[in-house]
Length: 483
Ligand SMILES: Cc1cc2nc3c(=O)[nH]c(=O)nc-3n(C[C@H](O)[C@H](O)[C@H](O)COP(=O)(O)OP(=O)(O)OC[C@H]3O[C@@H](n4cnc5c(N)ncnc54)[C@H](O)[C@@H]3O)c2cc1C
Image: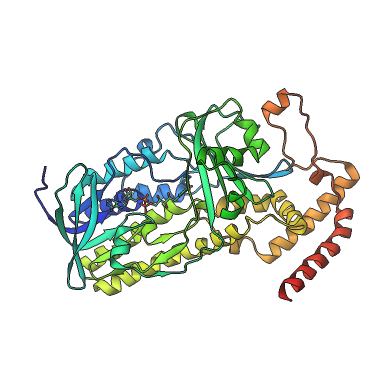
């Protein structure tokens, strides 16, 4: 059925986290909004195996989104584990933030549907699912609308608005059509990522919903996250060339994904007897960029304006934050507080202030996917064994502090000093480290005993001898690379 109206204040292309929340905010501010998406909801979700923290939920509270709907039957995750093989682990408790002390590994199909419904039922929003925008409409240099087709129809339909907003994800059609310049691009090295959801995953030794990051020290990182309806998301990410090592003779994503999982014995052990309930999905060569966020008659929000490696799990927060920042400034422009250029320059500033620090952290973390040398392993163990560092681990992704301010040089030096002292004590007393990784319940049932791995047995004396040698080798390596 044709829409009664074809002219709006704002047209938003894309109706997931950025687009749906933007539509709700602009309409709550009194504008008439057309929200378009080529998908119909609930739909196959965007490629994403996501975790959201209290900061994201607080932004959703502002538009009245219903947590019981977007997180229906989804367990509350209160602890994040970071384990390195079966050598050592850190357990971080999620700190309370505005009344919530938990995160969710949400089901994206359910989450996106809840946000779409929330927007569609907001006065002032006309929501049209199943409409694929194929081009923009122009008046000279200015964008004045969109053209496209409904699913199953050949007829083109035009809609007009003062501003067209691209909330259409990382391959944004709006961004391409307006030729929005890219900046802060950093794609070397690129990473690739594969994931699927599983049911009946074998328990971990802590009997509660968890997010577990697992490193194998050979350049591969894994994530298991307890998600909706008793499923567990199992993700593997690495530099694209590291992943390519596993793809020889295993062209299909399923076979590649299986080979990656088999490389991590603790992950693979938990999947014995489990059923994979989704196809394997993924992203090759994850892009990292910002785009010029506005021009005459157009603007960008969400992944369309800024995308980064999903390593840190920040994309949804940033998408919803960009929608908020845009809405605040655009409504200020409409009220006459600022001119268009001033208002949207303020949007750009707010977006960068909120997202740039975590962007650079993510790029640094991506570089850290390289297999560590012996010195980095030692430092890594000291850091992971420290309760203070565990606290930082939980605060950074929850946007409750930046890694730079939390991990000061003083704190690192203190942590290393404590680590050396702990090692010395363990050498003398044969005491187990509290960060030792206990066997999985399934391994225990097979008679695997509590064991201190080789890392736990090493005392500081050995390391004190080894350290100068390692540093010398590092120095020689650097000299050779320079030469
Ligand atoms: C593997 C993976 C894991 C991730 N994990 C996390 C995580 O743990 N936590 C987190 O916060 N983020 C995570 N992210 C990032 C997160 O998924 C994105 O940042 C988020 O989905 C961006 O939302 P968006 O609304 O900007 O775009 P999208 O969710 O991509 O939505 C864009 C919408 O635009 C529509 N569209 C596109 N073109 C057109 C067109 N021409 N006409 C009409 N409609 C169109 C699409 O149908 C789609 O519905 C992950 C991403 C990946 C790839």
